[in-house]
Image 1: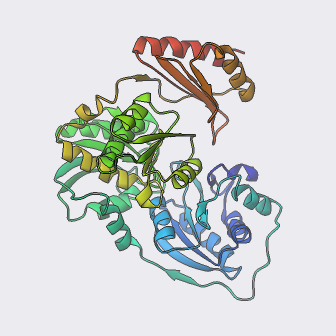
Image 2: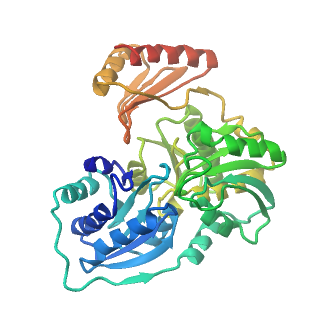
Image 3: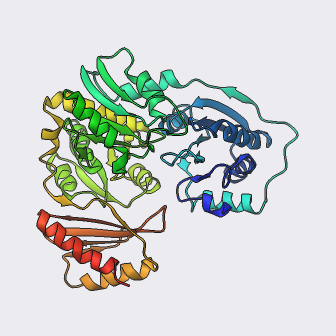
Length: 446
């Protein structure tokens, strides 16, 4: 259904069933009607439908007399960078991020903030669904092309003092990483073992979603086959997320990587604030404090994280989904900058990545588990009631978090899917398994 494409953080649906040229044209008009901007920068990914969707979106914008800057092929972090670096009023990337090839969509930015469902996307959706759109203006807006790659590469490389000699396996899943990664490392001593760098919107090898273990298999196998690679890295479709494995081909949870990069910042910025999302291992908070930083817990979701980082002047933030946020990147997330920071960290400490992460991997985490529950609010209330008076601490930053001395869990409603999501961690593997079974009994009960 049309209303289902207007989501929490973006607009996304199957092409051409849910989102087509007609809908894209209307979204272009509605975006202008809502934001009142006079200029929009627009980029696009390599999906098969992106050129047509781009043209229709741009036509809707220009038909209202608004000027368009064509950024060409872009990762989402490139579009975000362009918006702030060139002080554009608004920016849109035509992308469906990590979704399969039949999807497309839009990530929307205007007037110094990302549009969310509450602030912009729902209003745009209502205008489109009700066909409540302004008529074309007498004069069409202009369209000019802008090449941002030189400025963007200079910006990305500013996050590392020197690019060392190193061998890395990188899987870009035939998505936009295959566009930007070669440009970043051209002429350096980094040896890249490339997996699926050819741009192909059909994603012929696997989905561009490295959070799914099946999409990490080829990377892990390649790292093990090479034998001398320092680590492996997998990008999602639009390059705002990145997941790593160590030199032995073992996947590393993003919160652990976040703790390492936090240390990298805190060595030069004692007393700085570092953000982590509430699903992260408690080792992250402990290590931020150990390295002289001030830990700030956040609810899940990039809109909330970016807002918190700006308001509290936070230098760096990490999310369990593989998003990493940087104050010096205008508080935006970036997979390629995170790759730079990890290269720097590994080189400076001159140890295998498996040894560097081991001290942080001191607790036992379930990973994020998903459950279909008919009445999500009632189930959360039931679980909370059970632990009242027993737990050391219960709080409601996002869903409910329940803390004991030797274990904790969070259960919350998904921002993007009709699911409850559980994260649980304990001091021992045995306790983790025991408590996981305890919570699962609640979630699987009728």
